Image (tube, rainbow over all chains, first blue to last red; front, side):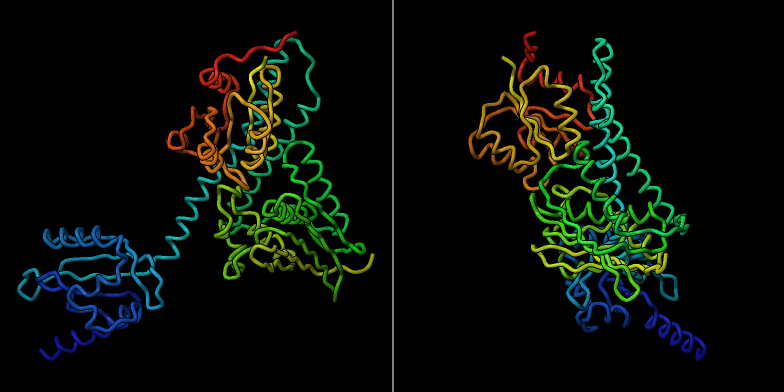
Length: 361
Length: 123
């Protein structure tokens, strides 16, 4: 018996210090125990959780569903698994996963249930972000397909009537194909990074000043080719001198394009975009400042997270797949560079890149 | 007289492709967002509006609410790449809807249902 008591004490210690929350209910289906991990999570007292008290911490919208499932499984003496939101000590509802099983006393008689609960909030958020991402992706892929199809059908009609084919139309069709290709490339890059395989870089000496000019020229051409809307933005470039880095020219161009696209997308029509470049303390510092909607301060650090979308950037108004900045960060880090942001809500955002300068000719 | 269409879409490629495809059959005006669309409506009379839902400044749904607030009863053909398009379009009171990427003939046929056949331009 002494051994049994010792074992029981040891088990209790294990349960008390387990990283998961643990509870137990009696024959009346009411709580008669929660471990200290549970109390640390909810920030409540043991007595408050007993009986049906613990239900106060469950999100009101989840209560009915969860209580009926629990009572049903309790009645049938069956295990279960369910997710619900539980109020953490800091007032935040977190998604948790609960697994419950019936248990018996020494004589094998049903005595209640034991549940273990883990916080799965991050995983849940990621799942939701991925679901949203897939829906957005389908939308973004369809967008260039629409003009492509219409251009092709229009050309087909012209050909059927032996009418002259418009060269400008073919150019615009080709530009839409390029847009679709870039989108698919971005998806492929993202998949490659998610699998832990780094992007292939071809390193050479790159002048950032001429790279910026190329990106701005490409944007202007894309307005002509009907790839980007003409919303009358004034883009100014202040690049005092050539600024050399060692890097993959097309990847760095992808980064600057992505940052410029964001600046344009989130700016009001006619808003100014200022691009600056300077070499300071053996670093090339590139900034892209817009007069757009800005980013809430608490979300700035999450901007480069994969699939992240700022809370004020609704999908209805600001389409995009949410990969540009995370890819940009990855590319810059591979170059020994840093991507950061400063922002004032409703006033604008400054994207800042710093890359090690490669001095000499 | 050609029938008059207002095309509202934030994607310049779609606007351009539609203009190229439809300009022989319809009299067209274009707008890049809902606000521009409302301004075009102040300027002229239209037989139908071809309206995208996801747009900056003023999205398609908000523009439709504004139309009904102003008592403007021009039939709207909602065009979108979103998956639950039909239910959204009928909830908004659209005359019809068509999913991107659409077929040109399908679009013309839907427009025909809403406003009757387009009159071809006089030679």
